[in-house]
Length: 162
Image (cartoon, rainbow, N blue to C red; front, side, top):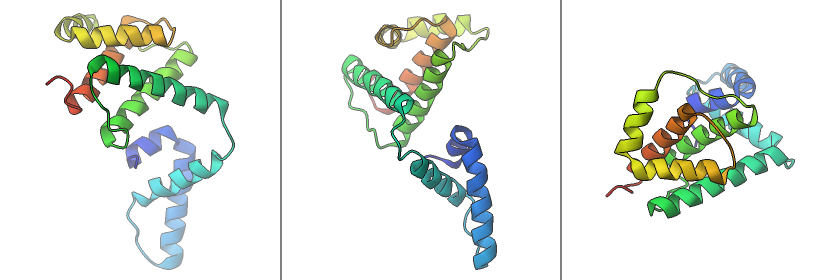
């Protein structure tokens, strides 16, 4: 299950409803459910609202599947798609896809970090370049750095460097 923080940032409007619903439940039933229940309520609302097929979400899930399968092959690992590490990775990939779709790039002064990680993790760098090509997109070194960091984080937690 997604964390409260994640739900709040992915579904801010729905989270407001979840928080209000939790307050109403606590008030009407004279109980005190944990604040995390607001995220559960929110996810039920989101799930209910997604009963219709959403072409853009299908497209995003398809991209994520391609990226994930490629990473598994390239890095010779099996990713636990039910775990928190993958959920976190998927969230970061959805943010990347959104920036790609809206032509927005991260921009900062991390060129030194990019060059360092490129040298320190050449296989991850090559994987990120290949993913960029698979997605058939162009983006700056900052986005490439973002991708390298999140591939590296996923792989280090899935033990692919051993």
